[in-house]
Length: 243
Ligand code: UDP
Image (cartoon, rainbow, N blue to C red; front, side, top):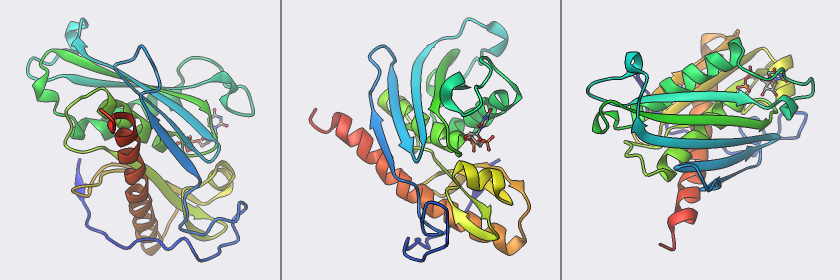
């Protein structure tokens, strides 16, 4: 489902909020995005935000050999999210689990509306999201990196999907929860949008918020997405700027 939201309030990043890392309530963690970091993938990106380090690799469009998945009139976009065993404090057991299957699914659903899949019938576009270090917000970091990798692969897209979370911790509605704010907090609302139109392609909520708090969180997350979107564009420009 796609919801259209038009919201333009931009966070100031100036009010203090007593957050553990001294960020303002509407401030993102420090971040960087680089496109084209892998030699052998068709497209790739590396993203850091706070303590998260995420790689995304794209292969395709290429022939899809699994006949039951094949779509006669369009490509399928498949995502695989994986967390490295060393990415978290308690070693993560290698291999897929419920959480990684869920995040793979929602990442695929968040990215799909942006891609002109109908240009590549009977094909697949494969997106791999590898979390090397995790510190809260890896699904959003993964989706944001994957969009840059898709653009780097030259896949035709309506827009570059961008993701960011807001939520509630210590009773306050805040942007871009860190791991401790996520674990000790009251709610987490990760979203993904297509910034040009404002269409929301992912909206999840874990925890409890009042209607008013939910709207505040949504506003914050949308504004966070807009800031990150500029960094995505800069990453692609840096990669291809001189060509
Ligand atoms: N996490 C962890 N071990 C795990 C899964 C998650 O330590 O097996 C941490 C990690 O820092 C992650 C955070 O918990 O970023 C929040 O996880 P969640 O499932 O909410 O997804 P995310 O916020 O990363 O999208």
